[in-house]
Length: 576
Image (cartoon, rainbow, N blue to C red):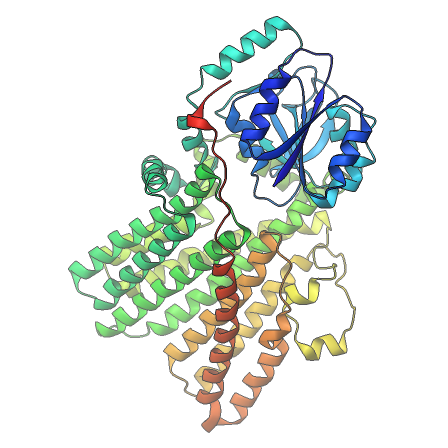
């Protein structure tokens, strides 16, 4: 549950309406206090619950506060909008969805709209800043090092008013919004990849609305998406032309539902951390099941060297994803440190500035080219579907390897240059051994040791994954282990490592990686397999079984925790 504190000031506003909206947004209790009343904030913070703090001059659609109150990021969040929506309020500079800088009133492209969601971990900092109005609270939180998300108002309406005329105009603007239609469009990601934007998003909201009316949960939609991907893999395995075409269609429909599950969560606000974790794991499982179907089908059709292609594809794609995840973590950390970002010079700084210009020019050919060239999931699914339907599974795997390899080289080169300039470490925290997937041996030999701040330590997890996967392949090929067994082991290892990444991205504490032996423990098993040819298949099969068992236990726990609590919905999308 969420508590709310409404700071009633001297400016125009409707405190009663705002209090009702806060209750509709999920606040079980709304405390009204004059600006600067530290006693009320201290009393609310003492309860240790998520706290909504709202200025009395805010006028907004019900869904604006509902969306803020149900933000799933797990961090404190500030409500932001265009500067014209609150010219007298603090300005905000945003970076990667976070508040990067708090500016004077009227400065910057975005303004603070007078509402904060504060998570329990940040309540002590909030209490220490009780001598200020809501803008002062924002500045104190950010200045104290609190990482604040920026929840931007897009298709709904929100503004801060100063007089009766402004209040009347704001109410009229709010009433003019079709709130349900806006909520449905807001469920679609603001920026997505080319294929998703033009071939999925135009009609996926219709599926999202239908799923909501049927009472489906996001996890249920994810399950259907996995089933469709499995059927697509069976079609690829059959290897006849009609089956290949049917598999391509099923793969596309499965990808549509892969988008719909997230849209449904955002539309209904049925979020759960475990559900997000399951979605991430399911996405990777689907992709690797499809690779297996392509390889098995091409082999069944008499085409050679197909399983080695699938093995190469899973190694390439997993290592790529590891660099993506940890580069993102480093970039987020840099964005939360303005001094670090401002200190980027040389070629890294020029590349960063050029990238920001391209990203700002949404819709331009160079913008879409940049989105396409990195070979995201939508483009991969489209490539696999088209090439398989027109040619065969082996050609699809070759295409994935060629495009994926070029994309990896491109992104790694550019990110390496930018990261070297930033010099922001990401592997220096106490969870670093778990994120590196260290086992008992490494933990014994390196107790408490942390990575340095070279600006390239974000590559460490991906490098360890690459070494381990290549060792699996080398030992398996050397000892004649069947390729399907090698592939199964790689899939299970990849899912184990995606579990670690998903926990980082969803702000879930990492499980102790040593439970799955750690990369060092598994390397010992691989060395034994290399030295004992007769036992090699059994050792690799046993390793796969053990890693699969650990994953199964974690997945079961995730499914058990993935049912989101019921979320109150504003009545009929009404407006104020």
